[in-house]
Amino acid sequence: MSVIRLGLIGDRDDAVTAHRAIPVALRLAGEALALPLSFEWVPTEEVAHDASVARYDGLWCVPASPYRSMDGALRAIRFAREQGRPFLGTCGGFQHAVIEYARHVLGWSDAEHAETAPDAQRAVIAPLECSLVEATGTVRFRAGTRIAQAYGCAEATEGYRCRYGLNPAFQAALISGPLRIGAEDEAGDVRAVELDGHPFFVATLFQPERAALAGQLPPLVAELIRACAGTLRGGMRTA
View 1 (cartoon, one colour):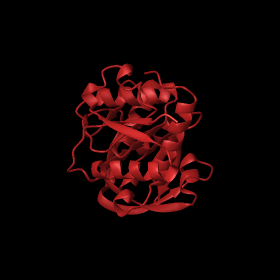
View 2 (tube, helix red, strand yellow; view 1 turned 180 degrees about the vertical axis):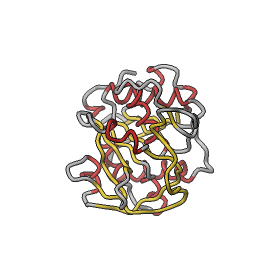
View 3 (cartoon, one colour; view 1 turned 60 degrees about the vertical axis):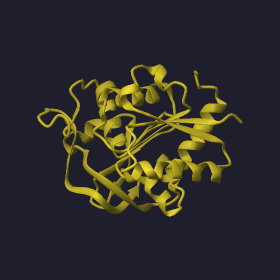
């Protein structure tokens, strides 16, 4: 089998815990699944057109936003969504997956992130009531979802480093179509979403990759790589 190629969309910074964890998580996934894989960091400002990401079998929009280019991150997410490429978004990747969906599926061209547009009328990503910087908490998976399948259990304890999440004022409209809730916290707040009718499109506000630093294979990373293997067998790579 050819080597699976994964694009990591984000601005690499080794001071970011998640960025140190991601290569470890991918190594663990490749070893556990006996699948050859490689990955490349793709700075957001370099995603100027679809060809910038079309060569990858899957995309992972990684933590540590605001990104240097919000447009670049959104372009990569849109490509994955529209072209059926396996996609994982974590933390900032979750936030921008929601914005991309709001803008290009719901037609909300004014959908924004409150961190970069604090006065926006339609900030679909807004400050959390309680900051989740270096916090851990229980997430509960909705039955029948891809994320529940990946974990094989009803709940898990995950780590966060974020101050922004899904704005409850827009939640009903955002999840009225193919985008649906994958996981919630104990208070019922959305902590993961996924896209129906897509080979693999999952985004989490928490950072599952952190488990790799304790030597544990993150289930969602394994599922992402499995989906990439399917993409490769299906001949979807275009470069």
